[in-house]
Length: 130
Image (tube, one colour):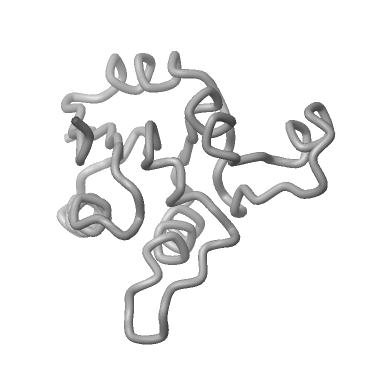
């Protein structure tokens, strides 16, 4: 089965942890992940600047390792990302900001990427949100 996964909640939320565990289990079970899409506060999971306390999971780091290790398509909604200060090199330059903070493996793109993923997948599974 092909899954598209959308995360709407920040990395410190239970929904972010459940989304990652679901994605890991899906791949371990032989399923395919068409795309991981971060939206709303979920975009913070793609930040290269999050520092978790020593006794807490660093889900941002784990997400980055997961998509890199499996060669997955990790997309951050550009509108939600910009609104929350998530910038790649190109956007940092465009908006004259001093630094980019989008972690390696992720790309900024439009909401159309979620629509496209939902068309390619058998199931769209969403975690978090309102």
